Image: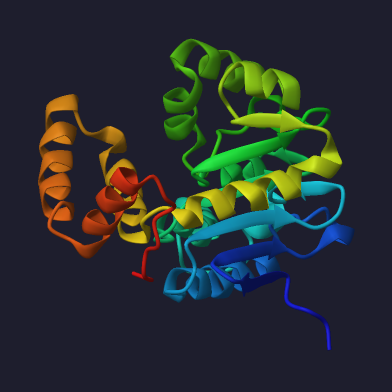
Length: 261
């Protein structure tokens, strides 16, 4: 039996989402879209995970979507923009995974594949691979909320340059402009992502979950609104067992031991 196009597994507290069509450069085919929806639902429901690593098998994280073929699938009665959104919707759900998601970009991430990487909380790149939205070079508008997310990550001016030119950046430049947290030799990308996930797993799962929820919710809120929301959740979190343990561990200069959330 052929393995699913997207797999979810967990070892200890670390979940792994794997794009599993290396022969197709993990392109966003209808099959991969459908299997991604199933796998990300597993990740969202997994209460034992404290962090999730997203990785693409093979030499390419994801080459994005074949827009012409993809837009011909789905509901034949839907309008084109509805089919376009339906194509991206399962990938947008990555933002709703309750724990931090780290994208281990061992290979190129282009177009929709690049957009998918922006849905992760943290990105670690291969210093020699290419990343970006080449839509302008294709004569089409960007999708998967790239035009919303990219300016918030690297600033309006740099985002405009990359979107309007369709230029791809090498991993080392991606790190310099703040698009990724780190750019490393290819063989170090996944091990570093897993190590970072383990670091996150030591933290209070409840505190991390709430901070992720806040950051996701507040992307388009103003500073005052963000401060109000953070104050509400911070005051609530101070009454929990995790806060008691975390503060005690700090005083006692030891590693905190948090229960699953």
